[in-house]
Image 1 (cartoon, rainbow, N blue to C red):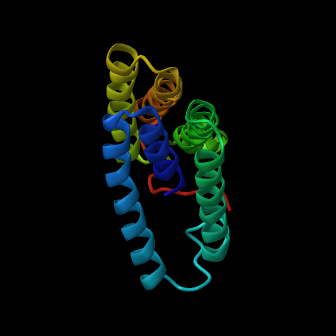
Image 2 (cartoon, rainbow, N blue to C red; image 1 turned 135 degrees about the horizontal axis):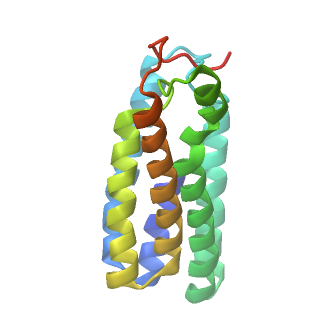
Length: 174
C-alpha cells in the first residue's frame, strides 16, 4: 500500500500516467487485500511481521509525509524525495525473499522461496526496466527495477538449483 501510494504520487508529480495509473490500481487492490486480510485473520496473526496497528501506523506516516512533501515543497524537489522513498521501498520488497538465503543454503532447499512471486517479480521488473530506460528515461524507475530483476533472477537460480530440496515442504526458520 505504501509503495503504491508513493509511486502514484511520484507519477502525478512527474506527470507520468504510466506510473500513477498502474500504481493507482495497485493501491486500490492493496487496500482491498489488506481490508480482507484484517477482516478474516485472527487479531494476533503470525503471518504479519508486526501487528495490524503497526502496519496502519506505518501507512499513515507514509501518507502524511508524502502529502506534506508534495504540498509544501516545489514539485520537482518533492518528486525527488518521494522517488527516493519509492526506490528504497521497492528494493526492500524485491530483496525480501532473499532473507531466507541462509535457510536455503543450509537445507539445500528453495522451498521457502515463493516461485509465483519470483517469476512475477522477474517479469514485472524487466518490463519496468524497459519502460524506465527507453520510454520514461527515469532513473527512479530504472534503478530499483534493475536491482529487483537481479534479486528475482538470483531467487529463480536458487529455485532451479535446489528445487524444494530433499525435505520438500516450505519450512521457514523458527
